[in-house]
Image (tube, rainbow, N blue to C red):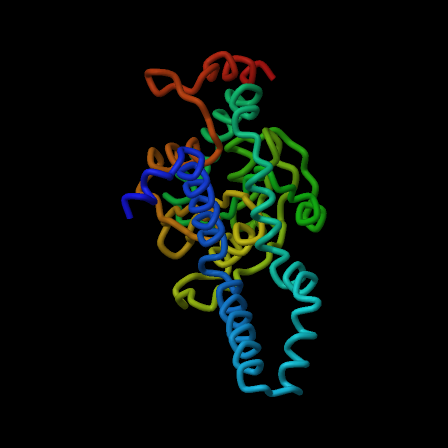
Amino acid sequence: MNGMLTTLRWRDVLDIIVVAALIYRVLTLFRGTRAVQIAIGLGLVGAAAVVARGLDLTSLGWLLDHFWSFWVVALLVVFQPELRRALGWLGQASLLQRLTGGAEQAQVVEEIVRTADSLAARRIGALIVVERATGLRQLAELGVALDALVSSDLLTSVFLPYSPLHDGAVIIQGTRVVAAGCFLPLSRNTQLGRALGTRHRAALGITEETDAVAVTVSEETGGISIAVSGSIEPVADADALRHRLKELLDVAEGPSGEPVGLRALRRRWSRS
């Protein structure tokens, strides 16, 4: 044991840490999705192949060996949503977003918080999806194109009960509301409780397949929640929502908590 420790180099420690971090990240990406059940099934198939060879079961061994001959293609097809999420996570340019769009994103956060707080007080349901690294163009094209600056007045008017778009989701890209009335894929997680309605299942569904952030307002309880990475978390109030959105969207803050450049941006928006 002491001999192994003396031969351990710093590169070996770094290698172990990187591999452990990657495995942990993969497990968190796949947690709560059908990929877990599929991975268990593939493990059972592999174990059956080993048993077939040990017992000299020629036909079964031949069948399982040919199954593994195209396992790479099968995994790409089966795990396509999870792989897309993983690649989208790797492609996030958090530092670049902080340098180029921090002030604009801060104002977007403020408008979303104001909208959610207002709708929650009146128990009006809403679903707002904020695009990050993974593009949502295909889903946006299925809704009603808006291409308008993000504002609380616009978002509130979309979700009012008499609006024809209130049942769908709003998709935000950067500082623009690109579409409203969008229908999102529902979550495939079979472990979800029946208490979650269609709006919350849609929020989970879009975050299972992409790295988007979804803000939901329940019309039954008036509660606000955030869905990200295939999980949903309630927020206590507007301040908690603001803090969580800034964290997820990489909005830089100054020492006093005021987003960098936000005051100047507010003056520019007020003139537009």
